[in-house]
Image 1 (tube, helix red, strand yellow):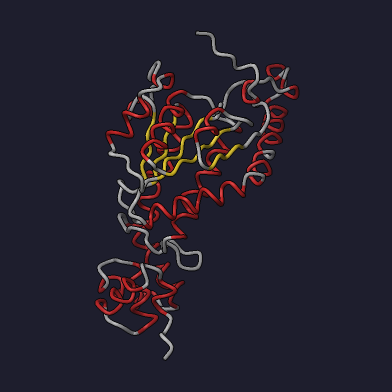
Image 2: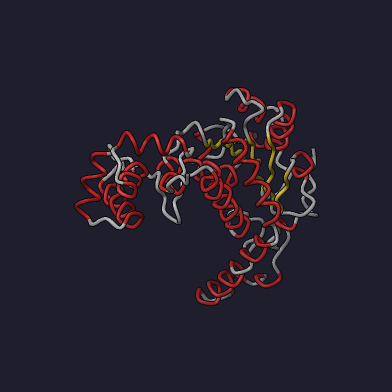
Length: 302
């Protein structure tokens, strides 16, 4: 079956780079950099939809639901990347933020032929996760027409899950199947059709917002500090100490000793220092405040 891509901005030729192969490396780099600077302003135009998407994700988390990214090719890889980064950055389980790519994990490095063209693989992947009405599914497709994503969003709607789409073309097909449709059109690519470039950058910026701001919304951040970071290596252990110092005003030794007493839980250590409480008392405060540090350290008024 013939697929018509002629109407997609991401498939159009860029007038500024028609003679790309004749330019010096410096001129090529300047052109590419100029194009990249178009991305952030175009993402800004979608901030109302991004805001709504974050609110949907936070609502899912508060109901015990999950955030599930889903896409093919570069779009899928970016979703998997963002999901994976949430684990060390925000201390969540791998099951809370999930990235699915058409063709399965092997497609992260080697393209799986035909996977993105299937309307049934997406639903199958979501069924394997036992998708439910508390979850949020974000379908990602630069073209906005990938069948794998279309099928997945249709199924997610049937289940009653929250649905969000992210495309890099206007009036994208996947937008029809999402409660919140994010469309970021950055114009023709530097290299015709190579959506790993401007479109990929735009998708990365949006995904950064969706995950980071959602985590802020469920108490994973205190001021601008990532207080649920998991200290899984030497660098992160030192970062945890620095976070405790910055959040509490403690010196290095006090931060180190309190972190050890808190069993390396940054939030607990901060609350212990700020409220002069024991580990158990600090944990109780955090539990009562649904994990929000700021609410945990505010003294109750009579």
